[in-house]
Length: 206
Image: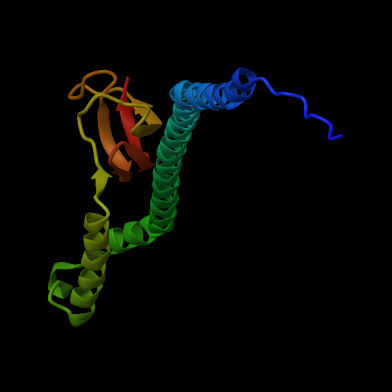
């Protein structure tokens, strides 16, 4: 006797594939609906990160710019100070050189004094003598040197006594010269600009 197979409910068997199909369709539907959301979230995250990066870069650039400006100002200040220092050094060197040259020329003053005294006492019959002419030529060369260095002789007569320019070595009464004025210059002085190289030796009226 053959056994009967249990009868299956056709309605239940038919519903299973439909349920699976519905679940699959729902899953697909969920995946499709959430994709834009995921994309939007990722896009927002990337945008925020980009904004943060831009802010960091902007802040760093501002810091670098401020530092560069400080460095530039410092460099310009140091350069200006160096230029001022360089000019001071050059001026000091020129002043020292000028002072040294004038001190050297000042040593010639006594020699010029001797030449002038010698030529002032030349007899009239020897004025055209070749030796006298040669001596006069030498004296003129010294005077030419003084002119090149703008050295001026101080030879006051009947002028007020100036202790900066003159040195009084004699005083005497005078009816012709006012008191405190110079009667006679005994030795010429010399100056260059406002610098007195040698004061004039003078006789002053009481």
